[in-house]
Length: 119
Figure 1 (cartoon, helix red, strand yellow):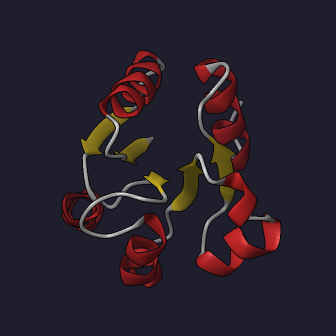
Figure 2 (cartoon, one colour):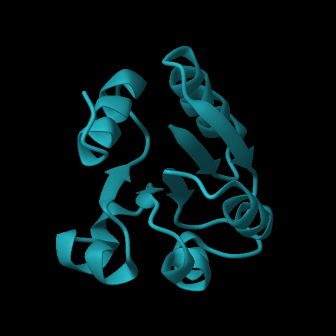
Figure 3 (spheres, helix red, strand yellow):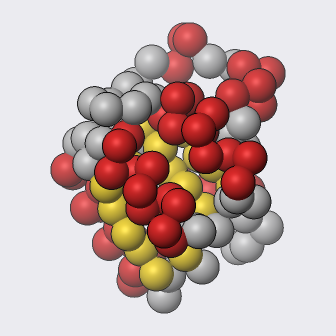
C-alpha cells in the first residue's frame, strides 16, 4: 500500500512512517500542506494521513484541492477533536478522524488499516 503522511510535527510523521514501513508499505511524508499536495498528486497514494492544522494548506483545504482526483482513503488527525464529529469529517471528505496525542501508535495504525479494509 502507498501511504502519504502530511503533518508539521516531525515526531508524528516519523513514528507513523516507521510503523507503516515496518509492515511493508511504501511511505512518503510531507511537513506542510503545500508539499503534501505535490506528493499526493505525484504519488497517487492509497492512503493519506493529514494533520488538520499545518502551514501552507490545512488538511481540509488539501482534501478540497485534491480529493476529487484520487480514490485515496483519507485520515484526519488533530488535537482539536471537539471541532469534529463523524458527520463533519465525512463532509470534509475524510474517512476517519483520530485524536492526537496518540496513546499507542500501533492501535492507531490498526484503526487506519480497518478503514482500508485490512487487518
